[in-house]
Structures are given as structure tokens and as C-alpha cells.
Image (cartoon, rainbow, N blue to C red; front, top):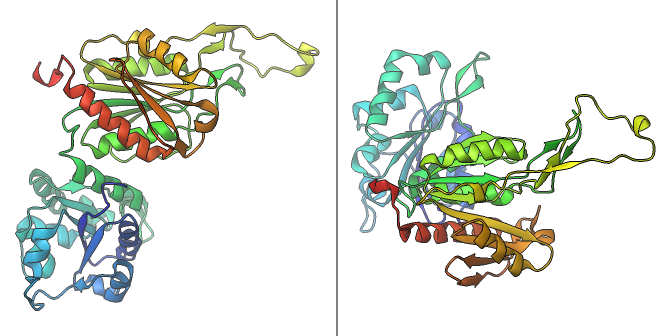
Length: 405
């Protein structure tokens, strides 16, 4: 379940060529469990038809400011009062100007003035229109009023030119909505650092010592922290995953580079979740040229040096540290040893073979106070939510609250 489940999203589509992309957005929101009410401006109906959105959302489409009121629905008033978010996607230069000026001569304008729901805007237009001082002034006005902007992106435009004005990817808009909905969550105002993925320790220009970590758990944790209102720094080793929208991302490769990044990021953090699978060792020598098998006969010996224990080396008071123990034997015993040795508030213990690379995980949560919590097999997204809920509780009981210092 995500924050979009059962959320009431009012999706307003204005009249630009990117309006066709709003149909995919409406579909994705509905698939995520949101109740989507669609508003089409008069210009939008030149590009897309109401039937498209009513079929995708299974709800009526709103366009007429004079639509009839009933005993249970007072037109734009009911829509405005019931909305969790007012999302305008795409937002043309004309629509942005009308919102900034507070015009209310169409259905969208009336809802925008009547709602107290947060406003999220995904602009899409020709780049010169977006960069025009008038448009920029209207954007600044709406930002000052609390509106959240997603995009626009840069790239090829409908005119054939290249510039800033492309409709943001659907994934980014969904991520922004999750941030907006969750911004007053249990981690609001807290700074969370999450590490993810494995590390690569180079042997030569084409080979490295690494592991099978996919990064899925760490990325799910970063998203769950964002869902709960946190400011998130994601420090990630090499992975093919798309970072969650809104996270500050630091990419690293080796254990030592991750160590430096974590030490810097935790200077003012409240919670550190160390989900990365950090290489314990690195080659003592990194060769500048590719090693040739002909030069080493039937084999070669590689000497390894010990990498720093990142989480054990961070000892700042008030920082809630959560670690992971992926083991192949003596799971609880090894996890308890790490819990104590690294000064953790909680450790997540799971079977390395069953967990690494999988979309699911079976975990045991072990706490510094001696308590434990065995969880059933769960999708990593669901497990991440439980871990962040426990992290929020641990931080609330932490003896040092940096928000008051």
C-alpha cells in the first residue's frame, strides 16, 4: 500500500499537446488506488476527450462551471472540499497565469479558489513561453503560496526545438504527490540518511570485487522515509534503479567513498539507515592496466585489505543508527553481535541468499533494549515502511532531539 491508496486526487488537465500524457497519469493514479476526479479545461478538450478519462478513472469528468448541484454534490464546492491534492498536469502558461491571478471563470479556477488542498503543478509548454518573465513571475507567486512544481524537463519539444518545457515523467509526478501527501507524516522535519546497493572495489580498469546487492531495499527505505515527511539523502552504490523523487542522491562506488559520503551526510542527520551491502575487503593493489591471464600462469594471488566499518565509525550523540545483517548461518547470533559492536538502536536480520536481489524479504528486527520482532515474508516496500515506522518511534524516544538544539 502507498500513500496514493484511497487519496482523493483532483486532476486538472489544461490545453497543451502534453494533455494526452495526462491519460497515462490518470491511469497510473487509479491503479495505485487513488480516487481521481478529472477536470478538463475547454482548451484541453481540443486535445483529449472526456470519455478517455471517465473510462480510465471510472468517474465523471468535470468541465462545465454550471454543472447541476444535487443533494450530495455541490459542484466545484464539493470537489474542492474533498480533495487531498489539486494536481494540474499539464499546466500551460495560460493556466499558470490564471491561477496566479486568481481568476475563477471556469471550473478549474473555481475549484482552485475554493480548496485548501495543496496545489501540485506540472508545467508543459514551449520553452520561450516558460522562460518568459511573466510566466516566471506567476510561477514564483504560486511557489510563495505553497504550490509544488514538478518539472518541466528539458529536451525535444512538440515544435521540434530543444529546450525547457517538457512534461515531467509520470514517475516524477507520482513521487511528488507522495511527498505532498506525506509531508506532515511522523518524520516531518527529520533528516534521514539511507545507504543502498553494493560497493565495487576495483582490481583493474575492468574488474572489481563486489556482491549481488540490487539496492532494492535501500531505495524502498528512501521512498518510505519520503512518504513519512523526512528530508532524505540517499547514498547509493552502483545500481540500475531509479531513485525516488525528492531524495538528494549521492552516488559512490567504493566502501571508502561511501564512508566519506555517510560521515558528511550524518553531520546534521537524525536517522541513519545503513542498508548498503558494503564490501568488507578491497584489493590491496589496484592495477592500472587490465590483468592478462598469460602473465599469471595457472593462477594468481590477490591480497585484500580491510575496509572501514562505516556505521561503527559514526558515534555522534542523538543519531539513531539502524543496520542490516544479511547472513547465511547463525542469523540471530551474528546479528546480535553486530547490534552491540556497532552501537545500533535496531538491526534488521535476514537470510542473505533469500533476500539479496529478491523483491521480498523475511526479517527479524532486533533492538538494543533486548526486544525482537519476527516479521512474515513481505514485499520490500512493505518491510521498508515498517522499518521507518520503527525508526520514527526510536527517534521520538531518543535522549537527544537535535530539533531543539
